Amino acid sequence: MSHASAAALLDRVHHTEDPQIVRRVITLVDTEGVDIIAQLWSNAEPDSLPGILWRLYLLRTWMQRNREQIARLWRLGEPVATTASAIVGVDETPDAEDIARTADSILSGAFTGDFAVALDRASAFTDVIANGLRVQAHRITAAQKDATAHGGTQGAQEAQGTPHDAQTRAARLMHTAANLLTTSRDFHEGAHLWRRGRLE
Image (cartoon, rainbow, N blue to C red; front, side, top):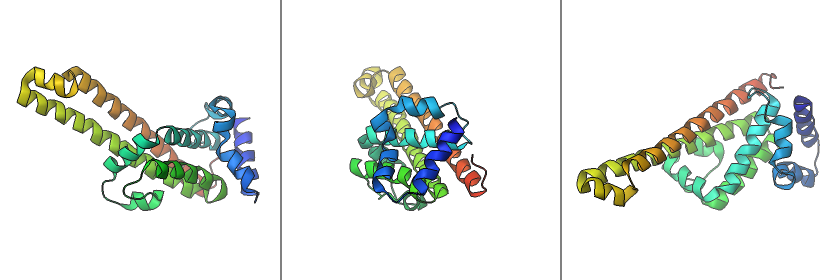
């Protein structure tokens, strides 16, 4: 069912010129709720069409709900424009609205353009955000060490909370970065499989 529904949805949108249908599919999670999509696709393997579509919908939802934070993470992860900026189609210093537009653009590209290109964009995007999370984690750790060195334990607590608090925050950021890198690899592999006609 998960494979058949994913293939049918993708095929229907690829063969329509009705922008309202495209918009309804892109905003499916917004209108129907994530539970509907989860029931169909969340248990699918990451190297399958339903598994990849599930990840694309989750990425869009996450980007839409956390657009300001993600814009900051992009600027940390991509302080100077590289090929990632060109692939994703994001300016060097995006704001929250840029992130929201990119979220829709990636998902709509999956349905109306080259599916593999959309997956390449999603992969590059998650790579940059993962890098931004790592930079933020390192900054927290460095600030904690600096505060401890210059102000003792009291100075560290005033700057960042206890050393344990800072370590916990940094560890959480690194954990999220690792999860995003796994998702990025899933998108990259999905693009490779799609180009070979093997993403089903």
